[in-house]
Amino acid sequence: MSSNLITFQILQDQAQAEQQVELLRKNGIPVMLEIMPLTADNSFVQSYALQLQPEQLEKAMQLMHTVTEEEIASVPADYYLYDFTKAELLEVVAQVHEWSELDVILAKKLLEAQGENLTDQQISTMQQERMQVLAKADQSASFMIGLGYSCAILGGFLGVIIGMNLLVMKKILPDGSKVYTYPEKTRAHGKRILILGSILFLLFFLLKVSWEIRKVSH
Image 1 (cartoon, rainbow, N blue to C red):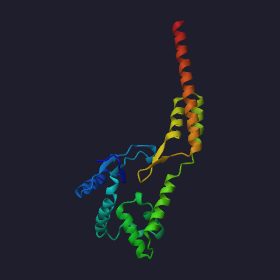
Image 2: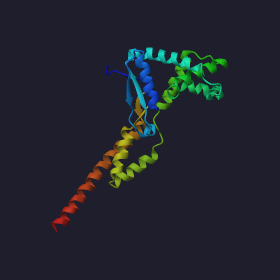
Image 3: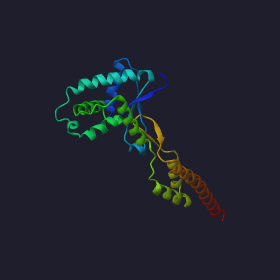
Image 4: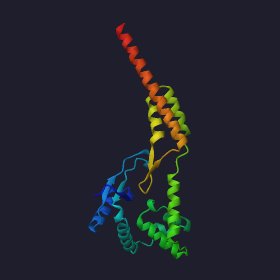
């Protein structure tokens, strides 16, 4: 399979992910199941990404749509989406990567029943706006910055770790893409904390080694 793969779905249920893989392969769609790394950004929840060749994306989407349409026919009358308000149903449609295919399609049908006929362009715009919200950098890092400087000045290796995290940490969006967790200003602090912490940690380490050598020599 080509290495030029794209993320088709990200699921948190291993059994469901394996079922999707089996379904796709049975229908002649090559797919690779990737176990996503555990990070603080995904709350250390194991996720599974279905990777496809770009030219197989449309076929896979059509297959899933067909299967989901068949599943909707057997949805019970007390299914939780039937109790959603119009605003909540719109959120389901906008948060397409955070809900199952069945929920998204059913939400569209329930909205249509309420006279809310969304065009493909409107849905695409809603989903893009949702992705932009998720991609925004986390601005609330003041405590981590202060803690990082304090630990770095005291020569603690924790300062190095905090600086590294502020500088390079990324979060995975529902579509599989990665963006920096913190904005450029915070990442600049992370770089300074990392450099300061590394220098002082090394300095204190060398001083300690020198002190131990002097004790032994005397």
